[in-house]
Length: 188
Image (cartoon, rainbow, N blue to C red):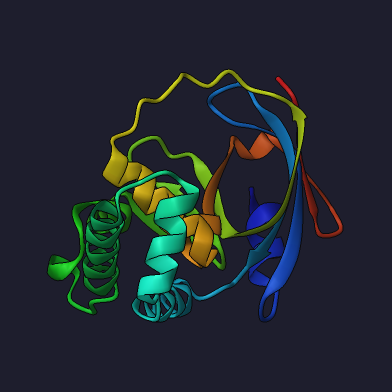
């Protein structure tokens, strides 16, 4: 584990890191390129600016492309902006429940590394730049409400940075090999 910490703490500035053979909870196996040491607050600020700059024409385009009512898209946009403002607050008590839970449940143990206080699992934190699926996972069908669909459509339309931000669970340190700037996760 010391090797993992030392590697991440030796990185200066933003760095691209490759993660190979990452298996998520749905059985999907992927290779990732992520940008580490990226400021989450900068991403949140940029996303808020992007959301606030949307025009009525953008709302119409999103509604038409996803066959949604314009009023639902406008309501979804309003909720996204309110949430983005809350999540930028310096006062932790003002943040949304999800944002506060992220702060409460993890300990930062190095640059772009954190550990879950309960499970003691190690996570690498960064922005996904590229993802190549090697083996598809099994995902349940989701029946989202129109406002949820609208929020996802807005996020995609705006290419929001926070949607690319990931906590990748790398699990037990003895299952990780470091090869240059690539983490190789050893299969079970």
